[in-house]
Amino acid sequence: MLEEGKISYKQLILLIVISRISINLTYNPHFTAPPENQDVWLSELLSFPITLFLSVPIYLLWKKFPDQTIIQYTQTVAGKAGKLIGILYVWFFIHFSALSLTQFGSFLSTAVMPETPILFFAVSLILLCTYAARSGIEVISRVSEFCVPIFLIGIMTIVLFLTKDMNLKALTPILEKGTLPVLQGGFTIAARSVETLGLAMLLPYLNDRKKVKTIFLLSFALISLFFVIITISIITAYGFEEAKTRTFPFFSAIKIISVGDFLERIESVHMAIWTMGVFIKVSLYFYLAVLGLGQLFNLKDYKPLVFPIGTVIIPLSILITPSIVELREFTSYKIYTWYALFFTLFIPSLLLLTAVIRKKGEMQK
Image (cartoon, rainbow, N blue to C red; front, side):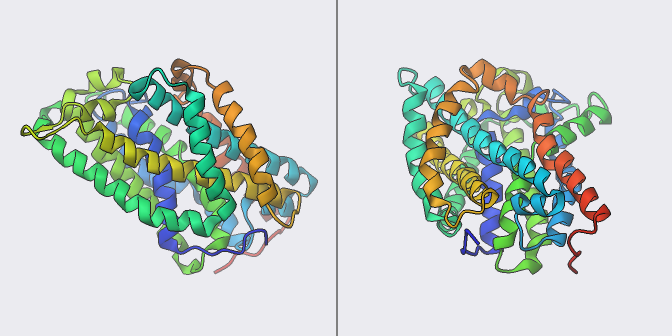
């Protein structure tokens, strides 16, 4: 195996949770997706069972190939065509890393330091992520054990400070447009859960395989709960219509916090903990890209790939979405939802069907 490290189920849950909520904390694309009103938190709640349903092919493929990553069993199932599929997944991990890097740089260069070029932020972060990716999954997991609790406690503290400015009437009327838009919203949120691919790459390195169901259930439940808390905080702070127009709604909400005369302007707290979250996310998918590429070409070590892939991610992060407008357009539900589903549902479903027809793999109990 290219990677000899092992991770615990708790570490894997932390990695999956932080990789989903970190970027969403600042951008929150759910406000521009159905139902496009104050019922969006209901869609986020509903996204939990829908995400579990959409992740069934990935789970069943793991049951058939528990010792292989998605890069490896695509070749077991599809032969030479599996290598092409593997290349697509490596591309996705590289692209996803670059996209997260773009979102990181765009936020800092737009909302915090507008005179500083995005390239500066991209290079600074990717240097740290390069070290993490070379160190392997055990190191990334241990870092997440330290950083994720700080991230979650910090965000929940900020939410508590926001409570005095919350108006719960902003959440009414409930189901204003009926149930169908809420269902559509739940689907679009669930469809963005590319973290299932993280599971498809990391489950073989789990040290306790009896906990796999727990990982799926708890990871997506925590993600859904976090979304609901943040969204309700934003909507009740200054209303849905106002939130929808903001590029960084949670960051904007933080600016109204004032506790007495001694605690104001706590945006720096948000920036610090958010940066930790994005660092873990980019490090993880950067690592998955080089690990997948190493497995694809049967290399003995993935580490020589780290610097070359890092040099690809940096310019790609600048080129894929040159402006904040194009970034928001690509990550909107109209485009990104279907892009994500192609990798998380369409290909895995075809692989599962092919594996069953060709009698590849044996379903583990």
